[in-house]
Amino acid sequence: MSTAARRKVGIAGVVVGAASAGVAAAALAKRYAVGRIRLRPDLEASEPLGELRGRPTAVTTSDGVCLYAEVDGPEEAPLTVVFCHGYTLNLDSWHYQRSDLRDSYRLVLWDQRSHGRSPRANVDDSTIDRLGDDLAEVIEALVPGPCVVVGHSMGGMTVMALADRRPELFGEKIKGVALISTSAGKLAEISLGLPALLAKAVHKATPGTVSFLSRGGTLVDRGRQVGSDVAFLALRHLGFGDSRNVSPTVVDFAESMIRSTPFEVIADFYPALMSHDKLSALDVLDAVPTSIMVGDKDWLTPVEHSKAMAAALPRARFTEVSGTSHLVQLERPAVVNGALRDLLKRAATEGAGPPRPTGPPGPAERTGPAEQAGPAAEESGQ
Image 1 (cartoon, rainbow, N blue to C red):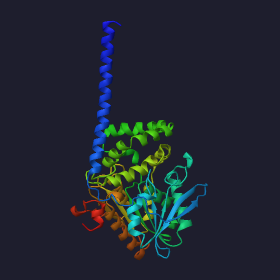
Image 2 (image 1 turned 135 degrees about the horizontal axis):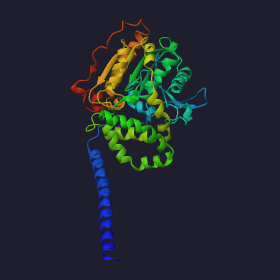
Image 3 (image 1 turned 45 degrees about the vertical axis):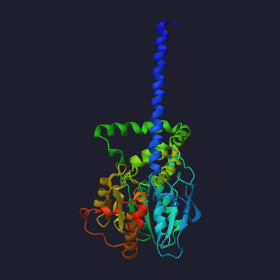
Image 4 (image 1 turned 180 degrees about the vertical axis):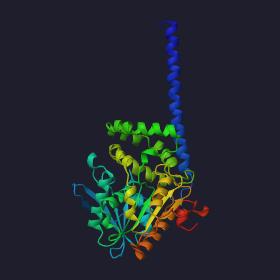
């Protein structure tokens, strides 16, 4: 080998070695960062997240999907609360709400099609309208009396789809609605916290990227399992507003739900979320007490989307939870639980009433400084 050739090989070796060292250093830094986070005091370390169970049941839909559901709480309770979880999550995402309400109310929690313990559905049936039909069939099968429906993110869209397709249920059967971290439409226009031009480029590229990756769904899922530390750090930063103080146990819990959702399912529902438009269906909800909640740092379903819903629902109570992001029901459960209990009281006493004159929404109900602590501190009254 000539001197020049040996020099090229040597340079290549140095480059490869440096790159390998860089990757190793990045991996070490990532593990160090995650390790330091996990060593911090964690008030939720002993919380039985995902372990609460009710009476298991199944609802077979009109298109043959056998949805998994659980009924919890006293059967004799006069009011049932139906929980609809969000995109890539499952019924366990309502852990803190179930824990708080199960002694007083009858609860129905269900896994939306292709999520949690419910089986995969065809891609053609992975639509928001189909989810609305599923909710109608869950209520028909599992709710004998009046109920309040609660939806987070995609679950809120499910509730809106139900209002669009079965408006007669609202006021007669459904006595109240909670919409948490959700949107009535135009998700394809959100900025994702990015500059306008970059956000536009991301939105343009994302559908094709998601479709391409879904073809190798199994391989992508294997990569997601390997990269759990990266997912932990990303979710801690993006899914929670107070990333420095959020419980690592809660982040792990949320990340495990997301990771258990196959990437093909994520890809199947993505177009439905981006094309969702149910602003016109909100008029139906104004017949019943409604609560709208959102974190002020939510970048997936921004505050402006909740304010638009509040403007269309003059009877609704709007709660903007400071210092929180998209997973507000896990990050600040005491605030969410308090708003839900207020809604349930209104639903039991007001029921359906005449719509008030339309007008701009009232001032947002914002949480105070004392509520900046973690879930355990909130629930203990600290």
